[in-house]
Image (cartoon, rainbow, N blue to C red):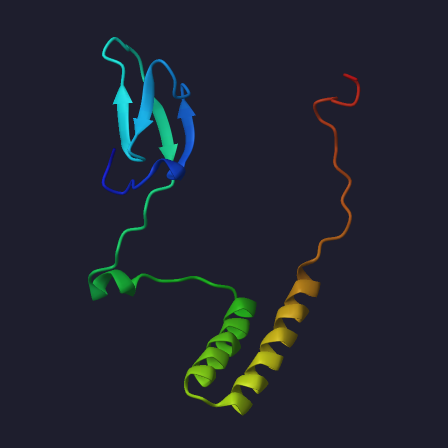
Length: 124
């Protein structure tokens, strides 16, 4: 398996399933039967790559205006906590919670009628 694979728990899908054709050993090693002919498709969640240079940090990050405003208070709250400023942390937390709840109310969608284009209701 590739370097960004650590253990079998990262596997999302496996076609065909482990059995006669192949099996997992030692949580990382995939053993394939000598007589097996065909394809094995294993989809897994890779380990994230480590950021090693400053150039990799220069990527743009696009966020909405709402998230930017909320995130600023969230960061300020945690910086105040780390700097032992509980009064400022409390103020930032209340403003963060207020903006978060306000944004949650704005995002709620109304009821929408779903059109049955495949006539699934008529199949039953």
